[in-house]
Length: 309
Image 1 (cartoon, rainbow, N blue to C red):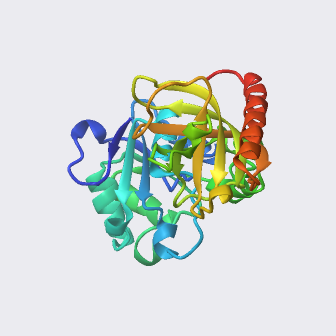
Image 2 (cartoon, rainbow, N blue to C red):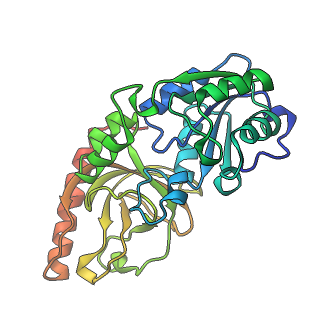
């Protein structure tokens, strides 16, 4: 999948696409239905989305709500067969009038042939444009327009319901609505390296800016996305604030079963499969290690029942 982060200087072979327009947070089953509506024979399949998410701009003090980072969204869209991702900078798009967005971005900049949006799509400064404006503008500017039902209501799915399922520690229920495991993706960061002294070296990743699932220990599937150890592994992950050590910034620490190698700086995709237990504080390190041994045994048993891939 090719990714463009501006609407200027798009090469000729990336123009003429059929594009679904929206935020696509979570890329759930409703979003997939919109993508299917955008598939047109003889046209590249594209997604037009925005970064950061508009809600982060308009409500900067709101609690984190995103189900996916931009990296995770791009990876999921690529798996669904999207050819081109136009990930446009929202700060540059937000001041444009509805007419300018249609003429300068969709038609002139990206050169789209077909646009698919949700029925409630609003665009342009002050949210002045709606689907009727888009249809009229497309007729003048040379692109067709199709509309779907509300993105979250095409199937019995909504991003809100997915967030609730995750917050309550029900990742399998969230996965049914998403159409895939809920994943946390990003680079492995240097941590305190306590895990290796306990026999459980972990890959530490940030969850900053993301909606937090219920804090606790999970059975996980881990995709190492790059490097000589690239591939899928089973593992166990602790999502939380590490109360045993007085930390207070949430992160996710993942132990990969039967793995040897250095993952610092490598990008991982960690899929939450089952919540094993809530986050706990232990009296001493011995009790912590005993619990980690039990967590690992339970996670191995759960993950052994899943198909690979």
